[in-house]
Length: 420
Ligand SMILES: Cc1cc2nc3c(=O)[nH]c(=O)nc-3n(C[C@H](O)[C@H](O)[C@H](O)COP(=O)(O)OP(=O)(O)OC[C@H]3O[C@@H](n4cnc5c(N)ncnc54)[C@H](O)[C@@H]3O)c2cc1C
Image 1 (cartoon, rainbow, N blue to C red):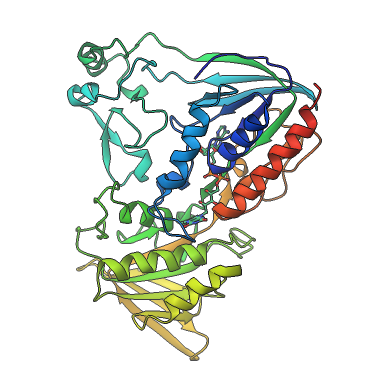
Image 2: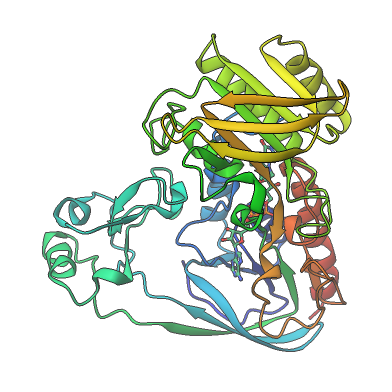
């Protein structure tokens, strides 16, 4: 993180997921100074937590690494992690922005050697794995994290653990005196790329999330299948670690439902088809059931749908799941739905149920202080001259469309910044 606030014609990008990263590098490579502000301790957003991503089904690092290199090599990009906007004032061409940075307690001398983690005794739920595993309270968010720098969880500050971490660091990188900081920026345009969060499935009464041990959501499934995930990539049940060989997917878990999310999240059908393939590849004797209202696979993604439909061990059942119960003895999940094509009740007992929850804009819960363009009824960002949305905080998108959208947002931001 180079610190050079207040360059002329600068662009502020909020959110360091694929949308924010794209907008930042595209604008910087044209020649504009960019400040990239990310609230997590690492860049990469939700994509970096995937096992694989369609359409090519490659690991997320293959696309991200190139972008991290573009950021590292571009002196026009200043990025802040663990940072959020506290205030925005002004208008197109002349915004004044306050950015608050939470202390990391580890400075740029960190070599990611891991000595602090070795001596740290306390463990915390691993946020990268959605709490499905624990991690030391002195931690690297994940192996490929950018920046490659450890973090000390605030829980250990003021404890013996923190002292031990400091003493163990041969480079003087653990800085327990670090406090919150504020940076004042002057920018000409703002790209808001604050992304999405999974819909809270516990709010859907009949689907068993938070009640039945082996009901998980689709982002947890990505982590279960990932080789750097909580189980080293073994798809097993949370209740007993047994291989999950019969799995049901519940499509539209909240989406297209006036009581939850009135919109379609666009990618969940493809995500479940991709995850069905993870299971079928890992366990050749597995069986997958996909309960759906409509299966949506736009453009060339249709080929992937057709491929999965051709697998006789993947059964697609047109019907909305009505009831989910747990067998108290085995912790198996019993799923009941009306099969509208067969005109009968479909009842299956599975090892695990995956809820294909939708993408909620992160701004549905927490608004960006002072962002004058406003939001629609679902919390998606609206635009105004000088303020442009990018990616999934504007509408649900896959990665390819997010990159195109963010490139467009960079151009709009440049138009607001040119000559300023
Ligand atoms: C289960 C599932 C599987 C998927 N699989 C695929 C796939 O295989 N292929 C595909 O193309 N798409 C897939 N997607 C869609 C993909 O995840 C999105 O297209 C992508 O994450 C959009 O990127 P983004 O940058 O808009 O948002 P995000 O990835 O959410 O990034 C937003 C960033 O902004 C940060 N942020 C949030 N609020 C603030 C704030 N106030 N200040 C600063 N920073 C903030 C966040 O920490 C995050 O780093 C999948 C989606 C789901 C639900």
